[in-house]
Image (cartoon, rainbow, N blue to C red; front, side, top):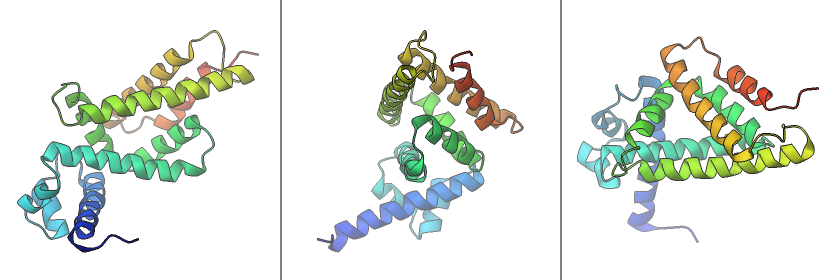
Length: 191
């Protein structure tokens, strides 16, 4: 049954805010995007936008959740977590503002009281778990070295990806996708 009334309109408006924020932040960057600008883009006041989100930090955290949702949909056809990561990294090169938002909020979220702390803690745990499982499967198949702990390798790959994003923000000539592919190749057995 379809949702009706003000609840459905509220859900739709929240989704509109998030979709608009994704576009504006990708285009203008995190630092150059204000709640006022987002409010204007969706026909609300700043207070109207914050009616749907408790704070600017929560709004930006939800933007990252929405980005992850879209990345997961885009990567749906990719058969492996590694393949999905490479596809996401390639896409990130087109949305520098979102990469900056991610990088900034991930640093801020190291404070346990920050609204993004739970998002990042959960995101890293899920990604580490998925990568660890894929690495273990690849180790059993002989396509990844089995003398490396799967969990440690997963943690290393995630750290490399985040570090590459920071370096790329400072030097856009860095090819993030090619570099992460090289990192993954290091884990392959030597012939």
